[in-house]
Amino acid sequence: MTEERSLNFLEEIIEADLRAGKYQQIVTRFPPEPNGYLHIGHASSICLNFGLTQRYPGYTNLRFDDTNPTTEETEYVESIKEDVRWLGFEWKHERYASDYFDTLFEYACQLIDRGLAYVDDLTPEQIATQKGTPTQPGVESPYRTRSIEENRDLFSRMKSGEFPDGARTLRAKIDMAHQNMLMRDPILYRIKHAQHHRTGDKWCIYPMYDFAHGQSDSIESITHSICTLEFVPHRELYDWLIEKLEIYPSHQYEFARRNINYTVTSKRKLLQLVQERHVSGWDDPRMSTISGLRRRGYTPDSIREFCSRIGVAKRENLVDVGLLEFCVREHLNKIALRRMVVVDPLLITITNYSGEVEELQSENNPESETGGTRPVPLSSQILIERSDFMEVPPKKFFRLAPGQMVRLKSAYIIRCDEVIKDGRGEVTELKCTYFPESKSGSDTSGISVKGTLHWVSLAQALPVELRLYDRLFSVEDPTDSEADFKSFLNPQSLQVIKNAYAEPALEAANESDRFQFLRQGYFVMDKDSTSDKLVFNKTVGLKDVWAKEAKKS
Image (cartoon, rainbow, N blue to C red; front, side, top):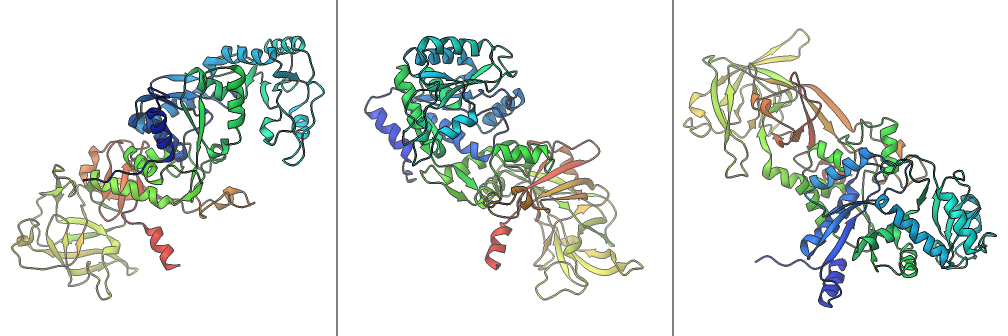
Protein backbone atom coordinates (compact mmCIF):
# COMPACT_ATOMS: atom_id res chain seq x y z
CA MET A 1 0.00 0.00 0.00
CA THR A 2 1.52 3.31 -1.10
CA GLU A 3 1.67 6.13 1.41
CA GLU A 4 -0.35 9.21 0.46
CA ARG A 5 1.91 12.24 0.08
CA SER A 6 1.14 15.31 2.17
CA LEU A 7 -0.63 18.25 0.55
CA ASN A 8 1.26 21.38 -0.38
CA PHE A 9 -0.12 24.72 0.83
CA LEU A 10 -1.92 25.45 -2.46
CA GLU A 11 -3.66 22.06 -2.39
CA GLU A 12 -4.73 22.75 1.20
CA ILE A 13 -6.26 26.08 0.09
CA ILE A 14 -8.05 24.48 -2.85
CA GLU A 15 -9.44 21.60 -0.81
CA ALA A 16 -10.73 24.06 1.82
CA ASP A 17 -12.35 26.17 -0.94
CA LEU A 18 -14.04 23.12 -2.46
CA ARG A 19 -15.27 21.84 0.92
CA ALA A 20 -16.70 25.26 1.73
CA GLY A 21 -18.55 25.31 -1.60
CA LYS A 22 -16.72 28.45 -2.66
CA TYR A 23 -16.17 26.92 -6.12
CA GLN A 24 -17.68 23.98 -7.97
CA GLN A 25 -14.50 23.72 -10.02
CA ILE A 26 -11.14 25.45 -10.00
CA VAL A 27 -9.69 27.36 -12.93
CA THR A 28 -5.98 28.09 -13.25
CA ARG A 29 -3.89 29.57 -16.01
CA PHE A 30 -0.29 29.47 -17.24
CA PRO A 31 0.42 33.04 -18.43
CA PRO A 32 3.86 33.33 -20.13
CA GLU A 33 5.00 36.44 -21.95
CA PRO A 34 5.96 35.41 -25.51
CA ASN A 35 9.34 37.18 -25.42
CA GLY A 36 11.56 34.11 -25.30
CA TYR A 37 11.62 30.35 -24.96
CA LEU A 38 10.42 28.63 -21.80
CA HIS A 39 13.03 27.30 -19.38
CA ILE A 40 13.15 24.72 -16.59
CA GLY A 41 11.79 27.30 -14.12
CA HIS A 42 8.64 27.63 -16.23
CA ALA A 43 8.28 23.85 -16.16
CA SER A 44 7.57 24.04 -12.42
CA SER A 45 4.77 26.54 -13.01
CA ILE A 46 3.36 24.50 -15.89
CA CYS A 47 3.34 21.29 -13.84
CA LEU A 48 1.81 23.13 -10.89
CA ASN A 49 -1.03 24.89 -12.74
CA PHE A 50 -1.96 21.97 -14.98
CA GLY A 51 -1.33 19.42 -12.23
CA LEU A 52 -3.82 21.08 -9.90
CA THR A 53 -6.64 20.82 -12.43
CA GLN A 54 -5.74 17.20 -13.09
CA ARG A 55 -6.02 16.50 -9.36
CA TYR A 56 -9.15 18.58 -8.76
CA PRO A 57 -12.24 19.30 -10.92
CA GLY A 58 -11.59 22.19 -13.28
CA TYR A 59 -9.34 23.25 -16.14
CA THR A 60 -6.31 25.35 -17.06
CA ASN A 61 -6.03 28.08 -19.69
CA LEU A 62 -2.89 28.94 -21.62
CA ARG A 63 -2.82 32.74 -21.76
CA PHE A 64 -0.12 34.77 -23.44
CA ASP A 65 0.70 38.00 -21.63
CA ASP A 66 1.37 39.88 -24.86
CA THR A 67 1.26 43.52 -23.72
CA ASN A 68 4.77 44.55 -24.87
CA PRO A 69 4.87 44.54 -28.68
CA THR A 70 8.57 45.43 -28.91
CA THR A 71 9.78 42.14 -27.42
CA GLU A 72 7.10 39.60 -28.40
CA GLU A 73 7.05 37.36 -31.45
CA THR A 74 4.86 34.65 -32.95
CA GLU A 75 7.92 32.35 -32.94
CA TYR A 76 7.87 32.43 -29.16
CA VAL A 77 4.13 31.76 -29.03
CA GLU A 78 4.54 28.62 -31.13
CA SER A 79 7.55 27.41 -29.14
CA ILE A 80 5.64 27.83 -25.86
CA LYS A 81 2.69 25.80 -27.14
CA GLU A 82 5.04 23.07 -28.33
CA ASP A 83 6.82 22.95 -24.96
CA VAL A 84 3.60 22.73 -22.92
CA ARG A 85 2.28 19.91 -25.10
CA TRP A 86 5.61 18.11 -25.05
CA LEU A 87 5.53 18.17 -21.24
CA GLY A 88 2.24 16.28 -21.49
CA PHE A 89 -0.38 18.96 -20.84
CA GLU A 90 -3.29 20.37 -22.82
CA TRP A 91 -5.10 23.63 -22.09
CA LYS A 92 -8.85 24.17 -22.36
CA HIS A 93 -8.72 27.70 -23.82
CA GLU A 94 -5.91 29.45 -25.65
CA ARG A 95 -6.13 33.10 -24.70
CA TYR A 96 -4.10 36.30 -25.16
CA ALA A 97 -4.08 39.47 -23.11
CA SER A 98 -4.47 41.17 -26.49
CA ASP A 99 -7.89 39.46 -26.79
CA TYR A 100 -9.00 41.81 -24.03
CA PHE A 101 -7.47 45.11 -25.19
CA ASP A 102 -10.90 46.64 -25.90
CA THR A 103 -12.25 45.51 -22.53
CA LEU A 104 -9.13 46.69 -20.70
CA PHE A 105 -9.45 50.10 -22.36
CA GLU A 106 -13.04 50.31 -21.12
CA TYR A 107 -11.91 49.31 -17.62
CA ALA A 108 -9.37 52.14 -17.71
CA CYS A 109 -12.09 54.58 -18.74
CA GLN A 110 -14.23 53.39 -15.83
CA LEU A 111 -11.40 54.16 -13.42
CA ILE A 112 -11.09 57.64 -14.92
CA ASP A 113 -14.85 58.20 -14.61
CA ARG A 114 -14.69 57.18 -10.94
CA GLY A 115 -11.85 59.58 -10.27
CA LEU A 116 -9.41 56.69 -9.75
CA ALA A 117 -7.07 57.29 -12.68
CA TYR A 118 -5.49 60.29 -14.41
CA VAL A 119 -3.31 61.11 -17.39
CA ASP A 120 0.17 62.22 -16.36
CA ASP A 121 2.59 64.27 -18.46
CA LEU A 122 5.62 63.38 -16.33
CA THR A 123 8.20 61.14 -17.94
CA PRO A 124 8.73 57.65 -16.49
CA GLU A 125 12.06 58.92 -15.09
CA GLN A 126 10.35 61.82 -13.33
CA ILE A 127 7.67 59.52 -11.98
CA ALA A 128 10.32 57.18 -10.56
CA THR A 129 12.08 60.12 -8.89
CA GLN A 130 8.86 61.39 -7.30
CA LYS A 131 7.87 57.93 -5.97
CA GLY A 132 9.94 58.50 -2.83
CA THR A 133 11.58 55.71 -0.85
CA PRO A 134 10.30 52.97 1.48
CA THR A 135 10.78 55.40 4.39
CA GLN A 136 9.88 58.63 2.61
CA PRO A 137 6.51 59.34 0.95
CA GLY A 138 6.33 60.23 -2.70
CA VAL A 139 5.36 63.55 -4.24
CA GLU A 140 2.06 63.90 -6.03
CA SER A 141 2.20 64.70 -9.73
CA PRO A 142 1.10 68.25 -10.66
CA TYR A 143 -1.28 66.57 -13.16
CA ARG A 144 -3.01 64.46 -10.51
CA THR A 145 -5.84 67.01 -10.09
CA ARG A 146 -6.94 67.04 -13.71
CA SER A 147 -10.68 66.82 -14.17
CA ILE A 148 -12.41 63.63 -15.24
CA GLU A 149 -13.36 65.29 -18.54
CA GLU A 150 -9.77 66.32 -19.30
CA ASN A 151 -8.47 62.86 -18.41
CA ARG A 152 -11.05 61.18 -20.67
CA ASP A 153 -10.12 63.50 -23.52
CA LEU A 154 -6.38 63.00 -23.12
CA PHE A 155 -6.70 59.23 -22.76
CA SER A 156 -8.79 59.04 -25.96
CA ARG A 157 -6.17 61.14 -27.74
CA MET A 158 -3.45 58.83 -26.44
CA LYS A 159 -5.37 55.93 -27.99
CA SER A 160 -5.77 57.74 -31.31
CA GLY A 161 -2.00 58.15 -31.61
CA GLU A 162 -1.79 61.91 -31.12
CA PHE A 163 1.21 61.77 -28.74
CA PRO A 164 4.69 60.28 -29.12
CA ASP A 165 6.11 57.45 -27.02
CA GLY A 166 6.76 58.47 -23.44
CA ALA A 167 4.81 61.74 -23.69
CA ARG A 168 2.00 60.66 -21.38
CA THR A 169 0.91 57.76 -19.20
CA LEU A 170 -2.28 56.75 -17.44
CA ARG A 171 -1.79 56.31 -13.69
CA ALA A 172 -4.01 54.94 -10.96
CA LYS A 173 -4.86 57.50 -8.27
CA ILE A 174 -4.20 55.68 -5.00
CA ASP A 175 -1.81 57.06 -2.36
CA MET A 176 1.65 58.57 -2.82
CA ALA A 177 2.43 57.88 0.85
CA HIS A 178 1.42 54.22 0.74
CA GLN A 179 3.77 51.79 2.52
CA ASN A 180 3.75 49.58 -0.56
CA MET A 181 5.58 51.63 -3.17
CA LEU A 182 3.78 49.81 -5.97
CA MET A 183 0.58 51.46 -4.72
CA ARG A 184 1.98 54.97 -5.20
CA ASP A 185 -0.06 55.86 -8.27
CA PRO A 186 1.22 53.04 -10.51
CA ILE A 187 1.28 53.40 -14.29
CA LEU A 188 -1.60 51.55 -15.96
CA TYR A 189 -1.02 52.45 -19.63
CA ARG A 190 1.93 53.70 -21.68
CA ILE A 191 2.29 54.86 -25.28
CA LYS A 192 4.16 52.50 -27.63
CA HIS A 193 3.97 53.03 -31.37
CA ALA A 194 4.98 49.49 -32.30
CA GLN A 195 3.68 46.64 -34.44
CA HIS A 196 1.96 44.01 -32.30
CA HIS A 197 2.31 40.37 -33.36
CA ARG A 198 -1.49 39.91 -33.29
CA THR A 199 -3.21 43.31 -33.37
CA GLY A 200 -0.82 44.99 -35.81
CA ASP A 201 -1.15 48.80 -35.72
CA LYS A 202 -4.60 48.89 -34.11
CA TRP A 203 -3.21 50.04 -30.77
CA CYS A 204 -0.49 52.49 -29.80
CA ILE A 205 -1.24 52.37 -26.06
CA TYR A 206 -0.65 49.18 -24.12
CA PRO A 207 -1.63 48.15 -20.58
CA MET A 208 1.07 47.49 -18.04
CA TYR A 209 1.39 43.95 -16.67
CA ASP A 210 -0.24 44.90 -13.37
CA PHE A 211 -3.30 46.25 -15.14
CA ALA A 212 -3.66 43.47 -17.72
CA HIS A 213 -2.92 40.51 -15.49
CA GLY A 214 -5.57 40.65 -12.79
CA GLN A 215 -8.27 41.85 -15.15
CA SER A 216 -7.50 39.04 -17.61
CA ASP A 217 -7.76 36.59 -14.70
CA SER A 218 -11.13 38.08 -13.83
CA ILE A 219 -12.43 37.93 -17.40
CA GLU A 220 -11.53 34.23 -17.53
CA SER A 221 -12.98 33.56 -14.02
CA ILE A 222 -9.64 32.26 -12.77
CA THR A 223 -10.18 31.00 -9.23
CA HIS A 224 -6.55 30.57 -8.20
CA SER A 225 -4.06 32.89 -9.90
CA ILE A 226 -0.68 31.36 -9.05
CA CYS A 227 2.48 33.48 -9.31
CA THR A 228 6.03 33.37 -8.00
CA LEU A 229 7.09 35.20 -4.85
CA GLU A 230 8.33 38.36 -6.57
CA PHE A 231 4.68 39.20 -7.21
CA VAL A 232 3.77 39.34 -3.50
CA PRO A 233 4.01 43.18 -3.46
CA HIS A 234 1.81 43.27 -6.59
CA ARG A 235 -1.06 41.41 -4.91
CA GLU A 236 -2.35 44.55 -3.19
CA LEU A 237 -2.69 46.36 -6.52
CA TYR A 238 -4.19 43.20 -8.09
CA ASP A 239 -6.91 43.22 -5.41
CA TRP A 240 -7.42 47.01 -5.52
CA LEU A 241 -8.11 47.03 -9.25
CA ILE A 242 -10.56 44.13 -9.06
CA GLU A 243 -12.37 45.77 -6.14
CA LYS A 244 -12.63 49.20 -7.77
CA LEU A 245 -13.79 47.76 -11.09
CA GLU A 246 -16.29 45.49 -9.28
CA ILE A 247 -15.43 42.48 -11.43
CA TYR A 248 -15.00 38.73 -10.79
CA PRO A 249 -12.84 38.39 -7.65
CA SER A 250 -9.90 36.28 -8.82
CA HIS A 251 -7.29 35.87 -6.09
CA GLN A 252 -3.53 35.69 -6.37
CA TYR A 253 -1.38 33.12 -4.55
CA GLU A 254 2.41 32.99 -4.57
CA PHE A 255 4.92 30.15 -4.42
CA ALA A 256 8.70 30.15 -4.33
CA ARG A 257 10.76 30.16 -7.50
CA ARG A 258 13.24 27.29 -7.67
CA ASN A 259 16.63 28.39 -8.98
CA ILE A 260 18.99 25.71 -10.27
CA ASN A 261 22.74 25.79 -9.82
CA TYR A 262 25.24 25.97 -12.70
CA THR A 263 22.71 27.64 -14.95
CA VAL A 264 20.64 30.79 -15.49
CA THR A 265 16.86 30.93 -15.84
CA SER A 266 16.42 34.57 -16.79
CA LYS A 267 14.96 35.00 -20.28
CA ARG A 268 16.93 38.22 -20.63
CA LYS A 269 20.20 36.45 -19.87
CA LEU A 270 19.31 33.46 -22.03
CA LEU A 271 18.58 35.87 -24.89
CA GLN A 272 22.02 37.42 -24.39
CA LEU A 273 23.65 34.02 -24.71
CA VAL A 274 21.79 33.45 -27.98
CA GLN A 275 22.33 36.90 -29.48
CA GLU A 276 26.03 36.99 -28.59
CA ARG A 277 26.49 33.46 -30.00
CA HIS A 278 27.80 31.88 -26.82
CA VAL A 279 25.38 29.06 -27.71
CA SER A 280 23.99 27.83 -31.02
CA GLY A 281 20.41 28.96 -30.30
CA TRP A 282 17.51 28.75 -27.85
CA ASP A 283 17.55 24.96 -28.20
CA ASP A 284 21.28 24.54 -27.63
CA PRO A 285 21.48 21.40 -25.44
CA ARG A 286 23.47 23.31 -22.80
CA MET A 287 20.65 25.82 -22.29
CA SER A 288 18.12 25.55 -19.45
CA THR A 289 15.29 26.01 -21.95
CA ILE A 290 12.75 23.23 -22.32
CA SER A 291 13.61 23.03 -26.02
CA GLY A 292 17.30 22.72 -25.11
CA LEU A 293 16.57 19.95 -22.61
CA ARG A 294 14.39 18.20 -25.20
CA ARG A 295 17.17 18.36 -27.81
CA ARG A 296 19.65 17.05 -25.25
CA GLY A 297 17.46 14.00 -24.70
CA TYR A 298 15.58 14.80 -21.51
CA THR A 299 12.15 13.22 -21.34
CA PRO A 300 8.86 14.84 -20.30
CA ASP A 301 8.53 12.18 -17.58
CA SER A 302 11.89 13.09 -16.06
CA ILE A 303 11.12 16.82 -15.98
CA ARG A 304 7.70 16.24 -14.44
CA GLU A 305 9.31 13.98 -11.82
CA PHE A 306 11.91 16.66 -11.10
CA CYS A 307 9.18 19.28 -10.61
CA SER A 308 7.30 16.91 -8.32
CA ARG A 309 10.41 16.24 -6.22
CA ILE A 310 11.33 19.91 -5.71
CA GLY A 311 7.74 20.53 -4.65
CA VAL A 312 5.89 23.75 -3.91
CA ALA A 313 7.05 26.00 -1.09
CA LYS A 314 6.94 29.58 0.17
CA ARG A 315 10.70 30.05 0.46
CA GLU A 316 13.16 30.23 -2.42
CA ASN A 317 16.21 28.02 -2.54
CA LEU A 318 18.86 26.78 -4.92
CA VAL A 319 18.15 23.32 -6.33
CA ASP A 320 21.03 21.04 -7.27
CA VAL A 321 20.98 20.34 -11.01
CA GLY A 322 22.17 16.86 -10.01
CA LEU A 323 18.57 16.12 -8.98
CA LEU A 324 17.38 16.88 -12.51
CA GLU A 325 20.13 14.65 -13.89
CA PHE A 326 19.17 11.90 -11.43
CA CYS A 327 15.54 12.04 -12.61
CA VAL A 328 16.42 11.68 -16.28
CA ARG A 329 19.00 8.97 -15.55
CA GLU A 330 16.40 6.97 -13.63
CA HIS A 331 13.86 7.23 -16.44
CA LEU A 332 16.30 6.56 -19.26
CA ASN A 333 17.59 3.46 -17.51
CA LYS A 334 14.08 2.02 -17.88
CA ILE A 335 13.41 3.01 -21.48
CA ALA A 336 16.71 3.52 -23.31
CA LEU A 337 17.81 1.05 -25.97
CA ARG A 338 21.29 -0.37 -25.34
CA ARG A 339 23.80 0.08 -28.14
CA MET A 340 27.58 -0.25 -28.49
CA VAL A 341 29.65 2.73 -29.63
CA VAL A 342 33.44 2.99 -29.59
CA VAL A 343 34.77 6.50 -29.06
CA ASP A 344 38.56 6.04 -29.34
CA PRO A 345 39.03 2.88 -31.43
CA LEU A 346 41.77 0.27 -31.26
CA LEU A 347 41.77 -2.50 -33.87
CA ILE A 348 41.63 -6.16 -32.86
CA THR A 349 42.18 -9.00 -35.32
CA ILE A 350 40.83 -12.34 -34.12
CA THR A 351 43.35 -14.66 -35.76
CA ASN A 352 41.44 -17.94 -35.41
CA TYR A 353 38.09 -16.55 -36.56
CA SER A 354 36.74 -18.12 -39.78
CA GLY A 355 36.25 -14.75 -41.47
CA GLU A 356 32.52 -15.19 -41.94
CA VAL A 357 30.24 -12.66 -40.29
CA GLU A 358 28.28 -14.15 -37.41
CA GLU A 359 25.01 -12.55 -36.33
CA LEU A 360 24.79 -12.50 -32.55
CA GLN A 361 21.86 -11.37 -30.45
CA SER A 362 22.13 -8.71 -27.75
CA GLU A 363 19.37 -7.49 -25.44
CA ASN A 364 17.87 -4.05 -26.11
CA ASN A 365 17.17 -3.24 -22.47
CA PRO A 366 17.74 -5.62 -19.54
CA GLU A 367 15.34 -3.48 -17.44
CA SER A 368 12.41 -4.24 -19.76
CA GLU A 369 10.68 -7.62 -19.98
CA THR A 370 9.51 -6.79 -23.49
CA GLY A 371 12.72 -5.14 -24.70
CA GLY A 372 13.66 -8.02 -26.98
CA THR A 373 16.99 -8.39 -28.73
CA ARG A 374 18.77 -7.00 -31.77
CA PRO A 375 21.26 -8.55 -34.20
CA VAL A 376 24.92 -7.59 -33.69
CA PRO A 377 27.41 -8.68 -36.36
CA LEU A 378 30.79 -10.14 -35.42
CA SER A 379 33.71 -10.53 -37.83
CA SER A 380 37.43 -11.24 -37.59
CA GLN A 381 38.24 -7.56 -37.09
CA ILE A 382 36.60 -5.50 -34.36
CA LEU A 383 37.15 -2.18 -32.62
CA ILE A 384 37.39 -1.70 -28.86
CA GLU A 385 38.10 1.37 -26.74
CA ARG A 386 41.80 2.20 -26.62
CA SER A 387 41.46 2.75 -22.86
CA ASP A 388 40.36 -0.91 -22.51
CA PHE A 389 43.90 -2.10 -23.29
CA MET A 390 47.12 -1.62 -21.31
CA GLU A 391 50.43 -3.14 -22.27
CA VAL A 392 51.68 -3.02 -18.67
CA PRO A 393 48.50 -3.09 -16.55
CA PRO A 394 48.29 -2.39 -12.83
CA LYS A 395 46.76 -4.89 -10.44
CA LYS A 396 43.00 -5.33 -10.72
CA PHE A 397 42.98 -4.14 -14.33
CA PHE A 398 40.32 -6.54 -15.61
CA ARG A 399 40.33 -5.42 -19.21
CA LEU A 400 42.65 -6.44 -22.03
CA ALA A 401 46.42 -6.85 -21.67
CA PRO A 402 49.04 -9.20 -23.18
CA GLY A 403 48.07 -12.76 -22.22
CA GLN A 404 44.91 -11.53 -20.45
CA MET A 405 41.35 -12.56 -21.31
CA VAL A 406 38.07 -10.63 -21.42
CA ARG A 407 34.57 -11.21 -22.68
CA LEU A 408 33.17 -9.27 -25.61
CA LYS A 409 29.65 -8.14 -24.72
CA SER A 410 27.06 -10.68 -26.02
CA ALA A 411 29.85 -12.57 -27.83
CA TYR A 412 32.93 -14.59 -26.92
CA ILE A 413 35.93 -14.58 -24.62
CA ILE A 414 39.14 -13.43 -26.30
CA ARG A 415 42.81 -13.50 -25.28
CA CYS A 416 45.42 -10.96 -26.32
CA ASP A 417 48.35 -12.78 -27.96
CA GLU A 418 50.33 -10.08 -29.76
CA VAL A 419 50.69 -6.29 -29.74
CA ILE A 420 51.41 -4.49 -33.03
CA LYS A 421 53.03 -1.04 -32.95
CA ASP A 422 53.92 1.58 -35.51
CA GLY A 423 57.31 3.24 -36.00
CA ARG A 424 56.62 5.66 -33.15
CA GLY A 425 55.88 2.90 -30.70
CA GLU A 426 52.10 3.53 -30.72
CA VAL A 427 49.88 0.47 -30.39
CA THR A 428 47.93 0.11 -33.65
CA GLU A 429 46.53 -3.43 -33.48
CA LEU A 430 46.08 -6.39 -31.18
CA LYS A 431 46.18 -9.98 -32.35
CA CYS A 432 43.79 -12.10 -30.33
CA THR A 433 42.39 -15.61 -30.09
CA TYR A 434 38.75 -16.33 -29.40
CA PHE A 435 37.25 -19.39 -27.71
CA PRO A 436 34.31 -20.79 -29.73
CA GLU A 437 32.84 -22.62 -26.71
CA SER A 438 32.53 -19.34 -24.74
CA LYS A 439 29.58 -17.83 -26.59
CA SER A 440 27.35 -15.71 -24.36
CA GLY A 441 24.24 -17.59 -23.29
CA SER A 442 25.70 -21.02 -24.10
CA ASP A 443 29.21 -20.88 -22.60
CA THR A 444 30.71 -24.35 -22.08
CA SER A 445 34.36 -23.24 -22.06
CA GLY A 446 34.80 -23.30 -18.29
CA ILE A 447 36.85 -20.09 -18.58
CA SER A 448 36.15 -17.40 -16.02
CA VAL A 449 36.90 -13.72 -16.73
CA LYS A 450 36.18 -10.57 -14.75
CA GLY A 451 36.02 -8.01 -17.55
CA THR A 452 33.41 -7.41 -20.27
CA LEU A 453 34.10 -4.95 -23.12
CA HIS A 454 31.80 -3.25 -25.62
CA TRP A 455 32.95 -3.39 -29.24
CA VAL A 456 31.85 -3.00 -32.86
CA SER A 457 32.63 -5.06 -35.93
CA LEU A 458 34.96 -3.07 -38.21
CA ALA A 459 33.33 -4.02 -41.53
CA GLN A 460 29.86 -3.00 -40.38
CA ALA A 461 30.88 -0.07 -38.14
CA LEU A 462 28.80 3.07 -38.57
CA PRO A 463 30.73 6.39 -38.30
CA VAL A 464 28.93 8.77 -35.92
CA GLU A 465 29.58 12.15 -34.32
CA LEU A 466 29.14 12.51 -30.56
CA ARG A 467 28.54 15.81 -28.78
CA LEU A 468 29.42 15.58 -25.12
CA TYR A 469 27.85 18.31 -22.99
CA ASP A 470 28.87 19.55 -19.59
CA ARG A 471 27.42 22.30 -17.43
CA LEU A 472 27.27 25.67 -19.16
CA PHE A 473 28.72 27.57 -16.21
CA SER A 474 31.70 26.76 -14.02
CA VAL A 475 30.23 28.18 -10.79
CA GLU A 476 27.08 27.29 -8.86
CA ASP A 477 25.45 30.70 -9.14
CA PRO A 478 26.79 32.73 -12.09
CA THR A 479 24.57 35.68 -11.17
CA ASP A 480 25.71 35.93 -7.53
CA SER A 481 28.49 38.39 -8.29
CA GLU A 482 29.12 41.87 -9.61
CA ALA A 483 31.02 40.25 -12.48
CA ASP A 484 29.32 39.66 -15.83
CA PHE A 485 27.60 36.28 -15.61
CA LYS A 486 29.08 35.37 -18.99
CA SER A 487 32.57 35.48 -17.50
CA PHE A 488 31.70 32.20 -15.75
CA LEU A 489 30.90 30.29 -18.94
CA ASN A 490 32.52 26.86 -18.89
CA PRO A 491 34.93 26.60 -21.87
CA GLN A 492 34.68 22.80 -21.63
CA SER A 493 30.89 22.69 -21.85
CA LEU A 494 30.98 21.06 -25.31
CA GLN A 495 33.34 18.39 -26.64
CA VAL A 496 32.79 17.05 -30.15
CA ILE A 497 34.03 13.60 -31.14
CA LYS A 498 33.97 13.47 -34.91
CA ASN A 499 34.90 9.84 -35.55
CA ALA A 500 33.25 7.43 -33.17
CA TYR A 501 32.05 4.06 -34.47
CA ALA A 502 28.70 2.47 -33.73
CA GLU A 503 27.07 -0.88 -34.27
CA PRO A 504 24.89 -0.88 -37.42
CA ALA A 505 21.59 -1.04 -35.47
CA LEU A 506 21.97 2.71 -34.81
CA GLU A 507 21.38 3.41 -38.49
CA ALA A 508 17.64 3.07 -37.82
CA ALA A 509 17.69 5.69 -35.03
CA ASN A 510 15.32 8.64 -34.98
CA GLU A 511 15.03 11.73 -32.77
CA SER A 512 12.38 10.17 -30.52
CA ASP A 513 14.58 7.22 -29.56
CA ARG A 514 16.65 7.20 -26.38
CA PHE A 515 19.86 5.19 -26.13
CA GLN A 516 22.32 4.01 -23.56
CA PHE A 517 25.70 3.69 -25.23
CA LEU A 518 27.24 0.95 -23.10
CA ARG A 519 29.73 2.32 -20.57
CA GLN A 520 29.44 5.80 -22.17
CA GLY A 521 26.16 7.31 -21.03
CA TYR A 522 22.72 8.18 -22.39
CA PHE A 523 22.38 9.69 -25.86
CA VAL A 524 19.78 10.96 -28.32
CA MET A 525 20.04 11.61 -32.05
CA ASP A 526 20.40 15.31 -32.90
CA LYS A 527 18.46 17.18 -35.57
CA ASP A 528 21.78 17.97 -37.32
CA SER A 529 22.04 14.32 -38.39
CA THR A 530 22.25 13.62 -42.11
CA SER A 531 22.20 10.47 -44.23
CA ASP A 532 25.99 10.72 -44.40
CA LYS A 533 26.64 11.12 -40.68
CA LEU A 534 24.50 10.61 -37.62
CA VAL A 535 25.00 13.02 -34.70
CA PHE A 536 24.21 12.06 -31.11
CA ASN A 537 23.96 14.32 -28.06
CA LYS A 538 24.97 13.05 -24.64
CA THR A 539 22.07 13.54 -22.26
CA VAL A 540 23.72 12.47 -19.02
CA GLY A 541 26.39 10.07 -17.83
CA LEU A 542 25.73 6.70 -16.25
CA LYS A 543 26.84 8.04 -12.87
CA ASP A 544 26.90 11.41 -11.14
CA VAL A 545 30.57 12.32 -11.68
CA TRP A 546 30.05 15.80 -10.21
CA ALA A 547 28.98 14.32 -6.87
CA LYS A 548 32.13 12.19 -6.86
CA GLU A 549 34.32 15.22 -7.50
CA ALA A 550 32.57 17.14 -4.73
CA LYS A 551 33.37 14.36 -2.25
CA LYS A 552 37.05 14.44 -3.23
CA SER A 553 37.39 18.20 -2.71
